[in-house]
Image 1 (cartoon, one colour):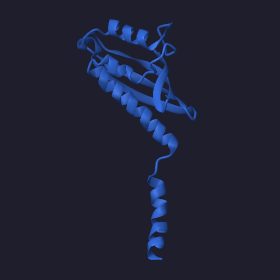
Image 2 (image 1 turned 30 degrees about the vertical axis):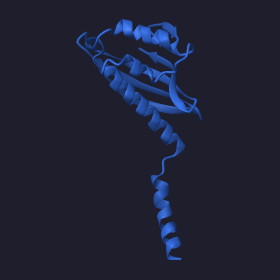
Image 3 (image 1 turned 90 degrees about the vertical axis):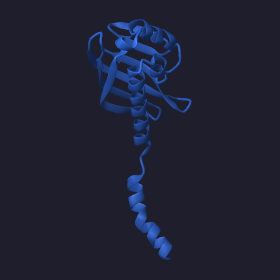
Image 4 (image 1 turned 90 degrees about the horizontal axis):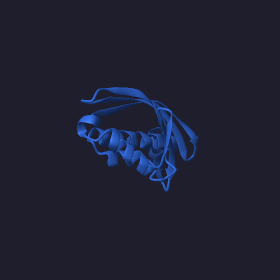
Length: 143
């Protein structure tokens, strides 16, 4: 009887500690953003691209231009940021995140890039989708 009483007394506190599925999803997405930030700052563009869906359907939109494809996006990053000095240090600020459905979220935020080539700051909106059990960026719009 004493064991059951202890269990029922602890149950409310255990429920408060457990994360909801949505909180788990959001934390997983934030982890990917943090990993991308670190990879970029280490001039690891392939590591940065691990957060993206490795597909020809990946969509990137910036400066009025739509780019399709994971390889094309990586090649564009390599061309635009060929050295550690050009990639510099990247920081993200996540301003808002919302659920689209069970397997998709949108994320809005700001990026802050400081490098020897000059600083660049702007905003972004990203769509994450759960693909084969992993969160991947399927669409990215930055300005």
